[in-house]
Image (cartoon, rainbow, N blue to C red; front, side, top):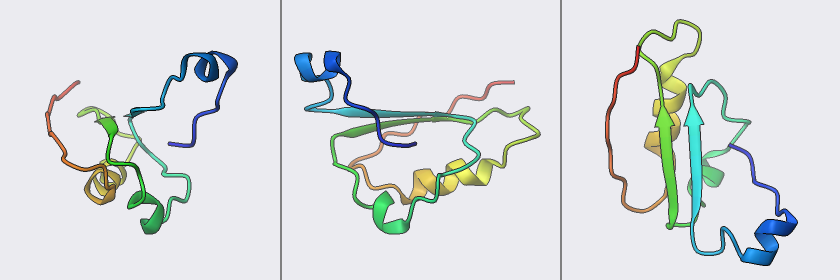
Length: 83
């Protein structure tokens, strides 16, 4: 969940100026994000986090902890189970 780079295409087309998307699959590490950093995301950030029922490697509590502590304004929760 690191910061995205501003490529020439992004700069030319102003991609990411009004919204941003975080898409995390089988989250296993949060790259030392602090509570203050989790609370400072812009409110127009969209977040998709996927965990997999049959994943015996990653600890689902990491994704749950990030989801519960990140501030991105109003959250819409949709649960799908894969596996």
